[in-house]
Structures are given as C-alpha cells and as structure tokens.
Length: 368
Ligand SMILES: [Mg+2]
Image (cartoon, rainbow, N blue to C red; front, side):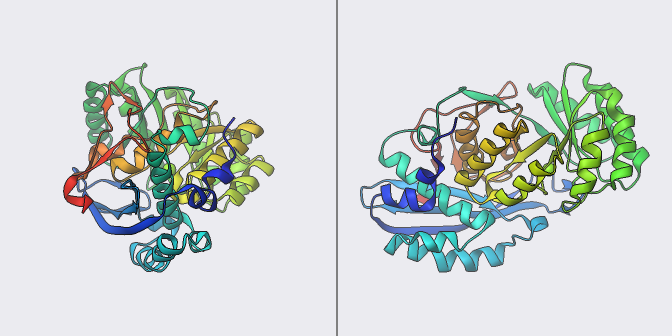
C-alpha cells in the first residue's frame, strides 16, 4: 500500500519544505548516441528538456528533470513559458496553486524537485515518503528503435551481451510483414531466455493489431503496448478480449481520469506508468494504486532523459507492491552529456542508490 498521496502533492510538500531562497532552471539537450533512433511517432537526434533546482535556506537543493513529450502535445517552448510563470510563485510564496495550474511534465518537474528537496532536508531517500520499501532495485528493459530486422537483431544482441535480459521492440505498421520480421529476427538472435515486449505507438487499427498479435504470439511476447490510437478505447477493449498477447495502455493512460476510464471500460490488461505524462509522482502513485486495486498490471514505462528522471521513477518503483518488472528505466544509457551521476545499470538491473532524495548527484558546474 502506498502512502497518502496528499502528503506528496505540491501542497503537502510545500507545507513540509524549507523556505526557498532561489531556483535555477536550465535547458538540457542530451544528444542520442544513435542519432537515427526513431519510433512510430517521432525521430529526433537529441532528447530536449529541463533541469530544475530549488535552493532551500537550509543549504539543501532539490533537483528534478523532465523532457518534452511532443507526441502528447507537451512542447518545450510552451513548457518554458508555463514554468517561468509558475516557479517564482512557488519559490517566493509557496503557492501550490501555481503548480496545480500546470499539467503533464511541467507539473511533474516542480512536484519532483519539491519531493527531492523535502526528502533531502529530512535526510532520507525519497521512497521513505512514498510507502514501504518492497525491493532494492528493478530489472530494466532497453528499447529497440525502428530499423531493419537485421539491424534491430544486431542491436538486441549487443544489449544482451551487455547483460540485459529484457528488450522492447518498436513497431510502426508501415508494413505488417516487416513488423513480423523484426520480431522474428530479434527472437531468433537472442534465444528463448530474453523477455520481449512490443510497442507500436498507436500505429495499428484494432483489426490489424489482432492480426499481428496472432502472428507474433509464437515468439512469446509479454506485452503489446499501445497498439491503437490513444482515444480508441473500444479498440483496446476489442483487443483485450481477443489478443493472445496482453494489451497495455501508454499514450491512452495519460491522466488519472483517463486511467479511471480504461479501468471502468475494462479496456486493457496493464498500464504503463510514467511520471511526466501523468503530471508528477503523486499522480503516478495514485494511478499505480488504482490499477493494483482493479487487478490491472502496473509497469513503469520509459523515462527518457537525464538519470535524474529515471532516479525519481526508481524511488516510486521500489514501493509498488505488485509492480510488474522490468521497468523502462535505462534509456539514459543511450544519451550523452548527462550532468547527473549515481545511477548505475549492472547485469540488466538498476540498483536503488543509497543517498538522500533521489540519491543521485548533479554536476558541480550546474550547482551555482
Ligand atoms: Mg510506449
């Protein structure tokens, strides 16, 4: 059972936080080691976002980072404008309504920085404020970008050789046979022991998704993520009733209200939880609890960006009792120039760091 989420809401955290003396918000643009990395909805050679630091008068700094989510409508310029309006009110007046006026990654950025500030001020890890510790780390997935079947199988093998035992395959339905060949080539390369999921990022119709699901089920696929457009609740329910591979909502599960609807309509087997799209760790914890109560699988989806973002999500992952592993908390490994250290992947697993707050360190040159 997770703790009372009102304590980790912006209002609850501001009541517990030290007086703040200032803040710093910086643009963070992390180049991808593979600039051709793409999925069905976007291709960008870098991962753009922000890093926020809140300075407490007790000498403690709370930090958080998020990226833009173009395909859900959260664009960097709009986010910057909204954040520049809200953050001064949060820092000088402890005005929680300024945070509540924001949505998605902008709200999440401030909520997370406040959580890090409060936890560090109390000299405890952030998970102490979220619930009872259930595990000391999680298995992690790496995501295979859209490429030819042979290239995707090569990338899969190199990740398996690095120690990963969980991989997610991106599909795009440009050609159903090509998607089939991608899955077949990867399964053939990695052998039967590696756990595979697929994600088509809304690119199939319900009928088309059922067809590909029936064809690739032989390759032992654990999850089919967001097969159909995010508003196609009927399509997801159609698939949940018929697909041999369990259906998971990602883009469709982009708010507490949307997840309530998915549960009510019995539309999916599982939900991919991501802090930025849901608007904060408090919202993500609420969604995790709702899913657990309804018997819907809870997984932690990709938190693309700095280690700081994955570190924050890890603090939540370790308190969710019925979390389905793996979590998608290793994507920072394919980005360069991250000013944050202290989160390490070893043998396909990320271990909970020992420090206070989110447990990671922001580079000195960014601290001033
Ligand atoms: Mg997804």
